[in-house]
Image (cartoon, rainbow, N blue to C red; front, side):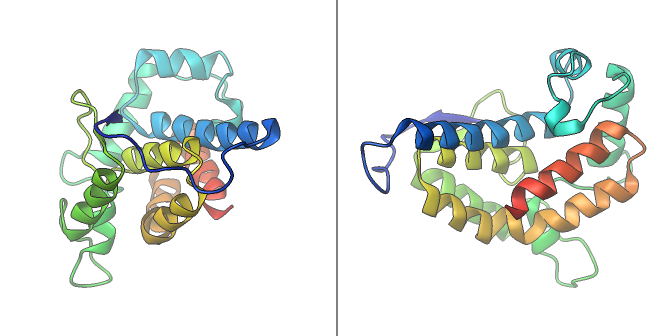
Amino acid sequence: MTEQTEVPPEREGPSDLDTESDTLRSDVAATYAVLAECWREPTEQLVEVAEAGELAPVVGVLDSVDFHDLRTEYTRLFIGPAGPPCPPYESVYRDGDDPDELGPVKGSTTMAVVRWYREFGVQPAADNPDLPDHIATELEFAAYLAEEGLDERLDQFLEEHLSVWAEEFLTQVKAETSEAFYSSLAATTREVLRQ
């Protein structure tokens, strides 16, 4: 996701973190980073890693993962053709006029997320086609905050953004998908965000 554009703010807390604290921070960051990658458009590499069982902690043990099937389901769930049943953008869930209807893409919530990224001097990589409030981009930013040891800011970002809308998104994915990969991914993401 991110390309560093500025020096990050100083870490909160003690500067000499012990090994256990460093390991925990890295584990949390890695968890968010893996989730982010799994929510992006599937690649051959993702399928290879899933079939090798390396994603078992995230998506469970899958009998097989077919690249074509996974991409087809990704497109159906998150892109369309006639409007996706599970749009992966925060603004859609938060910026609507009617609580029972989805809002617009690139709403005011998108700009609030962009302000977070700018505050930390990060921006989506040039080759990243996702919008700033895409579930994968927000999870990747959470990974960045965790890796930098900015625990209070991570908690704040989760409270102001991911925790507000992801539950509804993940519930929709679980209800709509016929692909074990996405069903398990939704369950794991929900569990991680509730911690």
